[in-house]
Amino acid sequence: MTRPRKAILAVLERTRHPMSASEIHTYLKREKTSVDLVTVYRTLSMFKQLGIVSRIEFQEGQFRYELCHGREHHHHIRCRGCGCIADLMLCPLKKVMALVERETRFLVEDHSLEFIGWCPQCR
Image (cartoon, rainbow, N blue to C red; front, side, top):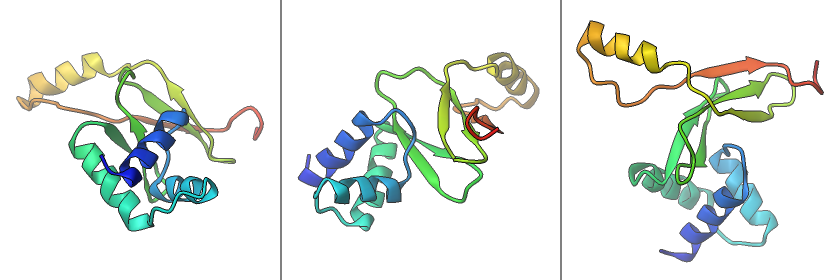
């Protein structure tokens, strides 16, 4: 495990919300940790392949990443105003997934569900 990989992993461990590669890069720069943006992207891609992080795509034109370890499957809600993201520690799609598998004969490996709204501060 290289120093940049450890630093990126440490950032993800300290945060409770999904972060973009550029947010991670900015965080590292503030901590005076020298890791270029390309390394952040490559590391996140490798972490995704290894199952260390999950990649989330909100309707904002970028991917966000969060650690998988120690976290149950969940979804998110994002504020249209300030962009804050909250975890929804529930999944109402289990029955829907079973229906999709029955109807299509596909084996569903994953799914995503995004809620978008207004947080209490932005309403």
